[in-house]
Length: 295
Image (cartoon, rainbow, N blue to C red; front, side, top):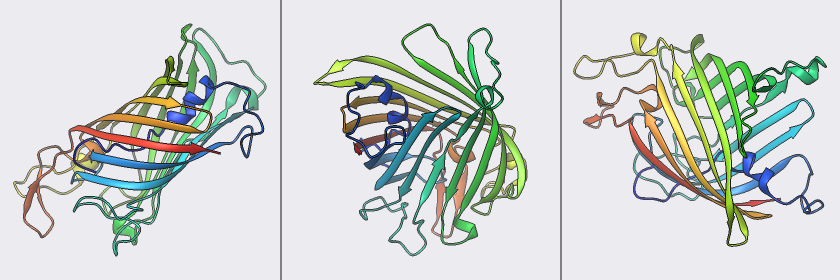
């Protein structure tokens, strides 16, 4: 996930931008409430691990909001087309991952309890979850993480959507890191969607979402780099900024994502995994782009 602007998967793009589409498309999709698409995604300079990566892959994406159930999720098939840089591994590689998945189910506390808990700008409250699974070939190459907590939707009195979620994290497998099988840290997630204008017959929108992770013990408990400094961090930030152009079935997105200590790797740490020393570049920009078809 490195190089110029190939760019990859606007994770939340459909989730919010579909509300900007016309309502006269009923019958054109498999379901009128489970919204789904298949995307071709390219990524450049992503910084979730100790090395920068590029990739081109297939993605299944879905979102729904029905009664008490709110959902967003995707499944990626890493390196589907065999394209990526030297650090990239995927489904066709011996030690690559055949699947990466992230889902964000939320369950409305208001509707499940038949109670209006709204006050001030807070419209509705949720039991919020963010689950991440990387199906690596063995435990040392696998991630299994569950964030759970409280979420809410905010009434902005503007033509935009805004939601906030705060979670505690339980960490099962984490590529062999020291925080496995423990409660370890917290995440604050903010998401927003702003419709911009009609463009070329479609709807242009700006979508943003940011994850703030803090309070992890990983920065204290994990290993040192070759110079005796900590290789991992107790906090990280990933902030995504998306321009999305949506039609009834086709959609196109460009994403710029800023990483700070991406994947909780300490920016500037010097590591050696057996092929010589290298510096971790976990702070900086990555880019994503997507072409997708909704069905």
